[in-house]
Length: 187
Image 1 (cartoon, rainbow, N blue to C red):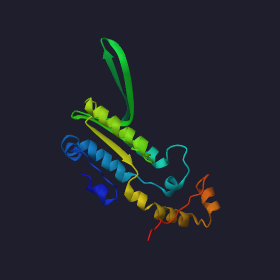
Image 2: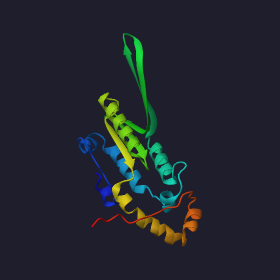
Image 3: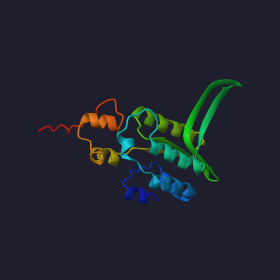
Image 4: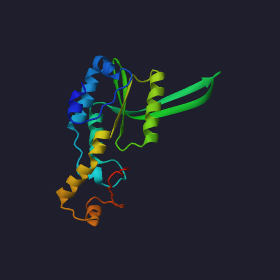
């Protein structure tokens, strides 16, 4: 099921029998995710360009998923003790897909930082333990892409004929210079 993505250098990490659940209970939904990711194109401008909102490729993927009924949803839990509300917790999830076999939650965290990744995992764990979702999926930049980032950027520099840092900053609307160093080698 995920072999096509692996063939395209996607990093796939599956936990707790999720692959079996996808294959048996959510084959159609799995295909929707795989097809959308296989169609995704990430131009060099999205990798190099300055922040300040979602990249065009992320916006495209969101629209693609919304078009397949992977809609945003806010899960809300309220806990009561003796009829008195004690706690209210909500989790807004980027994309939720409901089917007769259950619910899949999907977060797009393109440039995810560890605290947000941990938060998403904890939210999925909480939602799963409350039987609100059957599976949680996080789409983020993987190690394979990160390892090849310098090569991608070098291609972008060549594509635009950039020959100095100022040209790079102008072309990609950067405010801080990009600095690439070789890893330190201890002998």
